[in-house]
Image 1 (spheres, rainbow, N blue to C red):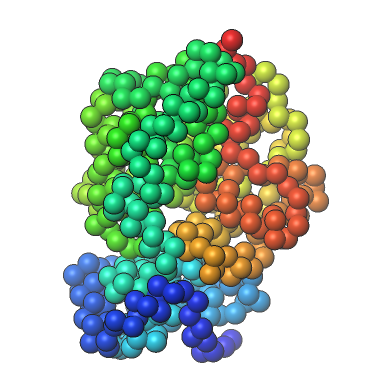
Image 2: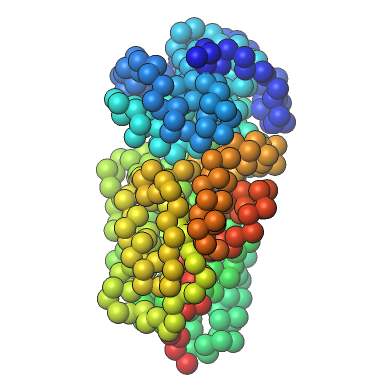
Length: 444
């Protein structure tokens, strides 16, 4: 086997990484690397790196490795060797050229999906190591341009899409009026104190997928849910700062989200169909703020919809007929174990279900998560071609008859759309909300 990273070419694609690197010196790079490793990682990072015996078992778990003809440079261990391994071996003295490449590896060639940790005999959390690399690069000012812009938006507006407060409220009122054209009594309640739930969405919904808010309003009306949405910052549950490595901004964004729910005195938060947002409130953001678990009960849309169906609050008029398959999002399946609840929804709403293989916690990542799709156009082709195994998995499922892919996560949705289009697979992609809106009994 070739040495991981032995033939890596430094062909940096990203303007911000190049520009940011122009302000760096070797001393500054070494100081930041050693500061982060010494003050923020403790024994955990060193134990992970020293425990690795280079057995290579993690390689078979990584879609980038499998999609690049088993090139060891794309194996999880190989990516650690090229980044954190070099930082530790050289006491931070890696130089300007190498740190640029490390930023690209950590942010665009690893989805921090944690599939490799399941294959590692020691359970080494390689995603954690890559997130430490991203944090170092962020503190050096060399995060990829497009995801850095979303972090800047979070810092300035508390949402990732530069949506102004009046634009957010206008969008909700617009969707309420649209929905009332179908069901006159539908409301999108704003700032309702003491409601059962606060429903939160990610920034791209009001920006690009406003129909999902319309559909959610209809579903809530049909189920008789007592709900509200905040009119103030804190409505966006996403958090790209978690993926750039700016933990301070991540904490601010999560704090605003929790505080919006507390101010409204709701009993729980229901998250829309997004995986990374759930990870940010359920795993990473809460812990950065000092809470082992979120300070207010919180569930993902998969759990919410499963409960509404199980409790008889949503009535199915006619099951969805085209054969469907289900993509298991990493952050709510490996991260939360919602795979069987997702299959329960499918069993109750769809006529014909065809499993893709592998599935559940062993499913392949979409290659868009972990902030990779947010790194934008310089890496789109790299991202899509870096997941040939996903395209092959979808093609095999299509040959069994599947016509619709259910992807209950925004990043998965976008990533799979790109894979389907690039590979000419001609399959539909839907959220659970799309399916439910289409088949439930709606009030007059």
